Length: 373
Image (cartoon, rainbow, N blue to C red):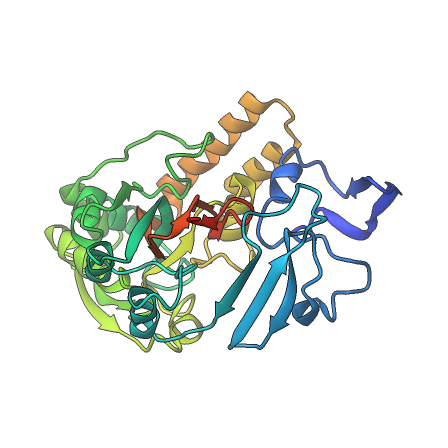
């Protein structure tokens, strides 16, 4: 993530408490990029073993670890920010959803971490005597990527039609049962300071006209989904129903969850996907939308958009930089190939004994989380 702007030789220690970063190009958002979960501070020459040693800068130190099995961490008393509230955390890898939930309901575990419960399960957990639900607002960013390099979506008119043909409010009401916010095809969540507050048109008649102009009237094709996430199929079904008014005929096609992100994602012309929110806006836009990025799930490329990102990184005035990022969002809304119908609340199952739970960017606050005394 940092390699385009930082080389290993550009990191030096001035003294025991000062690190100097020499960037290869200007980047006003560099401090925020360091907050991304992919960025770690680790001992020199430890990259080859860090996966099993777990030596970092956190408030816990690793005491046990078995890949895909049990692990444990214990509080690090000498942590620079003080000791955490808990003296230790035991963690387990449990692949089966039902097994995870049953363990929580039985009091065998205290938290189902980094997992979004489906709505039916969340209701069961919330009504149980020992467990409850924590809600992370707009934590799930749901997308419908159109592969811009495919014959179906290489024409911007077709991409515009696919957006005009549906109302995100209907998708939120149906797929999320109201547990989220509309996206209106803007990938920057509403809570971000850089968010562009803009509601695009909803006009199925105009969508039908654009398809006719592009020679794609009566567009018929599959939209791929899977059980990988509980919202995927409801979103695909809701979208397919919505675009019928524009004469678009989509067949909801389910693929194996085990191979969805290797055989379907970024390979089929139309599919559903999701990301977590919490990324700094520079990372979000560069990682998922910039031309040539390995995470650009729609393979969309727009020179104007790319140049806006370069300009934003070099702009030190916060207000001006925010305006540039908002211009970039407008380009995505108008021309982009990745639809954002909605942001969903993440529903986390936890014991009623857990206190001070909060999360951001798929990670909870390890310092403050604790148990009732």
